[in-house]
Image (tube, helix red, strand yellow):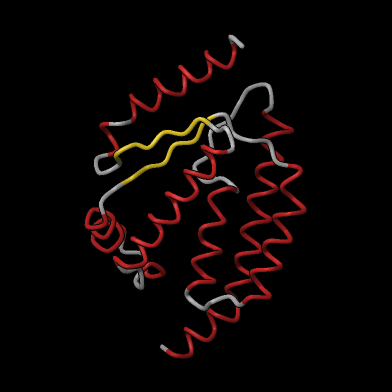
Length: 167
């Protein structure tokens, strides 16, 4: 177990940089390929930052590695196009734990604890506030039962799109 922890720490920053760069490429492809049509992403480059800070706060990346991450953000942010709309899906921690450990049972998720999820929810709320302050239309949806909110999401997407088109 200690070896896995040391190994994780030694690769955590590299993994975070790689994910950031993959999200950036995905973002640019959407801008270049789908600019006129629009696109829906399930994970955006903006949602990457909370994970980097959680790695930092848990001691898995150090000050210098976080500084490099922030420098990447500083360079690449000039090439980003703000999303028109973002959904923040919220579910209770016991529901999330059941989905992770009871339903999915992915080996790589075995170490996820309620405390980790609570910290992630806190970071997600910070991201919500940041995006709202940046002028992005944001909605929080109860995701304890995803099926109940899909029609709401479709309605909000259509409403936001028609509002944008009428400007």
